[in-house]
Image (cartoon, rainbow, N blue to C red):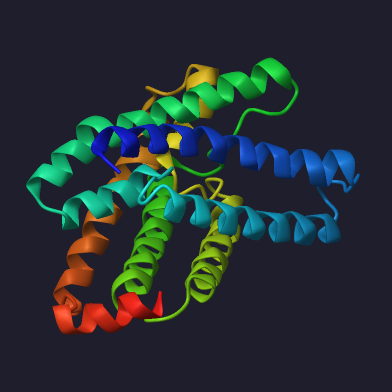
Length: 237
């Protein structure tokens, strides 16, 4: 798939990712009737979230690299060289942001009562540190699964999904546990808060710095796979 195809995939997947979260909430709290304070309802919502992550992992594989999270794209761009980095920052990340904004606008148009997206419930620097720490660990786990751990698509997706869900739960009461600046910006744009200090520091600067730190740390601690190591890994996929 060419670069144009990748950019279109990023935009579409970002749009779908926002909608997926909304659909899960509607299904759990609207169709199934669980209250937001019901523990069983939360467990059901988490189960649907894991299923959703499996679907998107399959779509990423189907599109041969389409992404919906700027942090994942940034990590990939940094490891791909200068040209890949520039393309990611200038084209791919804006496409993901646009896809998320369009999705939120569409959601609000159809379900105006659906909500206003994640909110910061702690001080700005506390929030930035929280999103940064969560991002650091999820990037480390993602890079480890991609480069170091052989195994099936199902097993890798299962590990990644549980890791994302666990980190999300840990940060949900503080920042929303988002680890996805594009999705957050979609909701912040709808509220007119996308250029506030709170939004930029907590949901962009903190996670971006953590992503760059995680990529650097991983490359320092773990040596890249050799061609001989890559071949058995590719066959196991």
